[in-house]
Length: 248
Image (cartoon, rainbow, N blue to C red; front, side, top):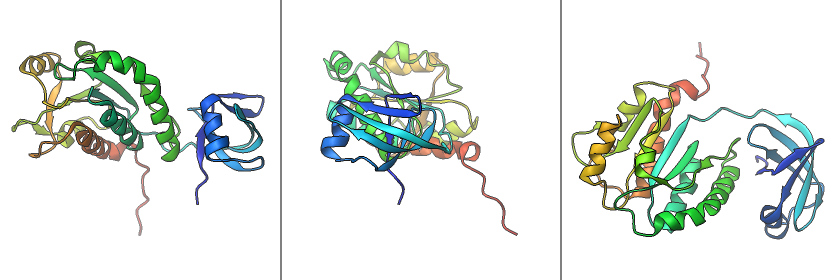
């Protein structure tokens, strides 16, 4: 069974530290003890580490050996229109598990009023959710969770592959859009409940984004997140998945 992995706040002189609320979670909820071994990461490297002390506000590890970090995940940025926070948080968790590199909350025309300002206060909570999901899925790096962004600012993304999900018939399948340039950074733009307005569609087209389809079904935003990321990751698979040697 694989050891649990935790993100640490700092590494200093061969020791790693988890502080504050995260330390409280380890000591009071998970009830970690001195002498237990876990994997720890600082978003760049992974070590096998042993707990040297576990107090309410700080857990201290001794680093034993550096481990292989694993395969880098595809560079995918998710621009997700602001939706009800319970559903948005679920999307953050699942997008993290699926390997997204960055999540940007976007204020769309049909996002409920007040979500943009409320989202600014929720950003730290979303980062904590992403961190916990990263630990569960044993990621080397937690995704970057940006502060909420206005729609026009999101369109300035410079990724080589930029696609917005369109529920209307006639759009190219997303896997074809993402497969056009394997290994290139991908940006996905997913709209709110109610979809995009005609004005937003025009702005995306003028900014050079491609409309893409996930099929004939109309999906909720958080469902579209899972489907789109699964497709985008699969489209990048020939580049980032480790090569399996041919058998003779």
